[in-house]
Amino acid sequence: MKPAAFDYYAPQTQEEALGLLADYGGDARLLAGGQSLVPAMNFRLAQPAALIDINGIDELFFIREDESGLRCGAMTRQRSVERSALVRRAAPLLHEAMPHIAHSQIRNRGTIGGSLAHADPAAELPALAVALDARMYVRSVTDARWVAARDFYVGLFTTAMLPEEMLVEVAFPTLPPGSGWAFDEVARQHGNYALCGAAAVVGLDGGGAVEDARLVFLSVGEGPVEAKRAADLLVGERPTQTAVRAAAATAASQDIDPVGDIHAGPAFRRHLSRTVAERVLSKAIEKAAEAGRH
Image (cartoon, rainbow, N blue to C red; front, side):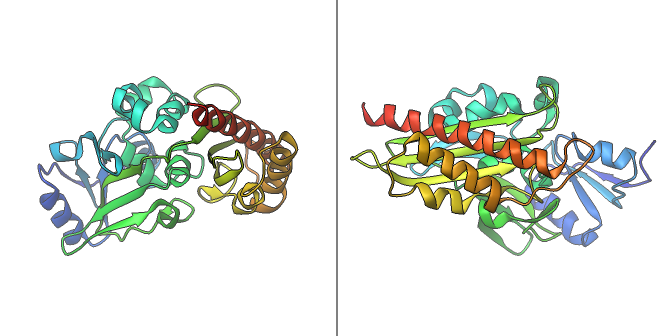
């Protein structure tokens, strides 16, 4: 298959790109890494009137740290995030999870912003953004705003961005002292889409009780699914294995409503979610306890 005809633009600034988005009124698509968009166009699942190639906008490529945490430009390659010593120090959960994303060849071209904006429910980065309480900076010709990751995803392959808006950067706040984190997923083989995955962030207080907990699933809903009931069960409690198992069971039975597809049925995904949740919560608690001893 080949894509339908389209106009091609290669702007050199954000303003040029935003102007084109405004001119086309929702009939244009941004080309970042192209790892999802180009195959969709080849199968004619996407038929934009215009393709706006933003690979020439240098100001969208960056990884830096400020007083609030890590900030990544939307065009930063996933492989750059994976290899960054700054990411490893400032956002260790993000660093730990990056090798799970597809294959290295995909990560060489794929961008952090492209994956976040594409909003594939089986993608790792949206779930990580929600687990890390990230914020998205989006711009249009007339406006600019920050959107919390948990508010950014509103449906299947759908975000809170308007057609004329572009994701510019993502900010990951620094985790509080005494925090632990973990990521895990199950796939038929490495690099395949996950049948189920989860990210967890847990904070312990001075007495060893759970002060804060976040558990976010991927590949079990229409987007990243935050397991709030499971997290609430842990907060204020000693993080025993019994408590973790109860939280994982609650996540599987009450927090998610998985659907079936050609890869796995809903019952199997629910079963996997309990196992994966127990793994990531246990690992996150172990890391939080270790952090509290230093």
